[in-house]
Image (tube, rainbow, N blue to C red; front, side, top):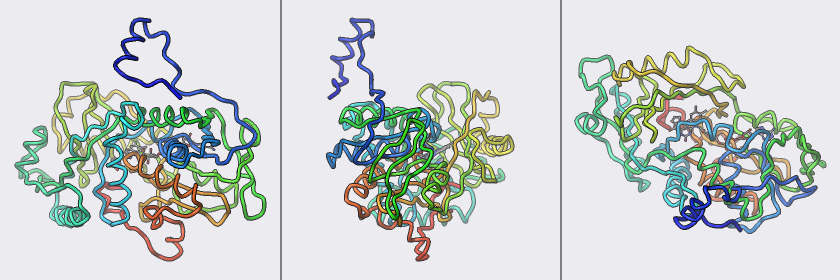
Length: 417
Ligand code: FAD
Ligand code: PYC
């Protein structure tokens, strides 16, 4: 068990010039066999391991990661947390996650900096206004705290917005979820890693899964860059790399991998204390605690496995946002990066069992899976432990593509990708 972080441990370590802090997680060598192995130490994989150990007391487990933990999309996203999806199954899982975020710092004894500063989705066409009204009705029926707000309220919440009624895309109103917001992405990965490690989970970094070994219709283990690991249960949670991992077991998934980029400006004084998404012009904006404006837009328009992204996508995002937030035209951008996102046709995730015994997948979160990490980890752990889908995960099974039971969030998800 790890010692707890507290005001007292901070004071004690300050006395020693911070030389004696315990490592947040170990770097164990892999055992030859585990009860279950999770592939991918992003937020979803680490949360799955944490809940397997904490809720189901399954502690002889490992998370294997080809790079460093949290170095995939979890450490590359723009940290927006909200649950305003259109379809009931989506609302259920995203709201479970959002509500777990509320108490996550306490649960993990690690400050994930959840900041429910409010998320505002601008309506810049009549069509968008009607669509968000529909989403607001669906969300309120499901018990979410949300409302439509007027252009005047939009301007009050975010004074830097261009409220010229004669501009190309004037603000007609907005959908507002006051309990949405942001969290610190690295801290979410680190907090889950520390929590899982302290419960006995082995987190093995720099350990690439090369293939999944099968014994007929069931899994036998994993060939990794650190040798063979025997196990009867494998949960693959590798986001944009999911297809390449599961194809080694002979499984094909309805997933496409694309690069999604983001960028940050130089730090400035506080100008924006909520998250604003402008889907018609195709960009979104928030301000980090350091003062940087965090900016994102759409995916590259072609499949690829690059973590850099193309210049036109970046240019499109910035051009779009300058129209809605004129002040950003004077800002220097500091850095940009990309992540490989895993997109399904209906823009909803795939969570559950596969036709191969002991092989479970959790993927397809695409451009929107940071917000779902706690809920996804919770239901995926339950699914793996009990070898049947958790009721909230059930609608997201692979069979929905065969049965034509899609959970269409392609536009309704309120992100324009
Ligand atoms: P990852 O964090 O990518 O973790 C998967 C891990 O698997 C990686 O660490 C990878 O190295 C590892 N791996 C891959 N192959 C192997 C292998 N063969 N062996 C071992 N390990 C392997 N979502 C939101 O909700 N809000 C946002 O604002 C938001 N903004 C985004 C902005 C950008 C630019 C990007 C790229 C994404 C954004 N997302 C957002 C989406 C979100 O980041 C992802 O859906 C989420 O982080 C996925 O988490 P994960 O744990 O599934 O994947
Ligand atoms: O899902 O809210 C989201 C999101 C914003 C930017 C990328 N994804």
